[in-house]
Image 1: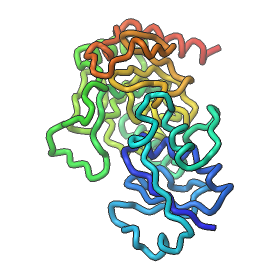
Image 2: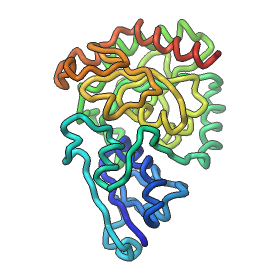
Image 3: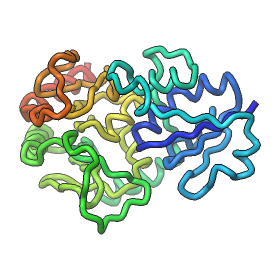
Length: 289
């Protein structure tokens, strides 16, 4: 039996789908047709991955499938806000869900290039940050003006600079690497990361920690078993987040309260910089024990 799964959307959704591949493999051979095929590269549960930007569905290898399977959480019960994205994918593909299911990317083949980048930049210890996002990486053009499909996810640049300044003050011998695309806001006391997003996943493995919004670093963190601080705006951490991280929002901290959530509230992501640093230090202290 051979099933080809169409996985659309951004990096976060594709990363989340990787949590299903071990259980899907139990049913049949697995192929993936997606714009972010690197999410499934070297995955032992995936027979073939097809780049949907260049390979049509009528490709003979896809047409040889017993089933071509498609699901879209954003057009399902997921909209009610009660399901994690992984749980939603499970229900749509008739897979038994449990909370231990985590995304897994396989980027060990990129370690050499990442180590070379760190050596060229003379970087030893480092913290990763990402305070903006919302741009598709597929087909990205750095000459385009920065636009965000969901700007209320972004952390305010004024506050972000304060967080960076506090991190530099607390960890003087540590480099702050900004993992945003070239046309997004830049910050003093940081080095802009110009690596591919899949290399950033590999980079995260040896980071001292991370601070970010609902973005790539948040999605990658369970795959590399790395804990950090995540700032939430117009999205729910119960749907896109992970309990291993410290999840913060203006109206609540680490324990979700649906009655306090209004996705359009501009205060959601205005978390105090000092609180972020205090919570980051707790993670660091726990790691050191």
